Amino acid sequence: MSDTIQLSQARRGDCGVIIQVGGHCHHDEHALELERRLLELGFVEGARIELLHEGLVGGDPIAMKVDDMRVALRRHEAAGLIVRIETAFTTIAQPAADQVAA
Image 1 (spheres, rainbow, N blue to C red):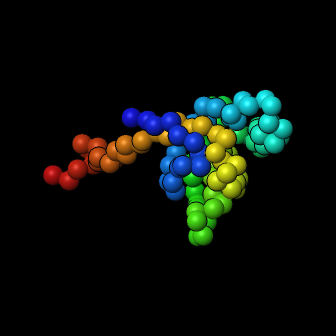
Image 2 (tube, rainbow, N blue to C red; image 1 turned 90 degrees about the vertical axis):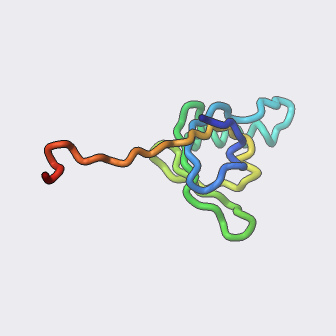
């Protein structure tokens, strides 16, 4: 199961994939500049992302892992990124049959 949200809505421990960068509002100069800077930092479609930390006051800024680097953004900057949050089901490792004591 997966959900599509703005990165600004993610919580600590959430993992996913970036599916859209920017709102594609080409008449807003500030939005275009922010989109360009996010792309330069490595926030590209298909990049894997994990939210590592939220600030103490209001949860701002947020620190995340983007592929192999760590980046901090304010939530209003992260709102321009759409991510597909993936729910990971962890499997408990079972001992192999030959490792089980009789």
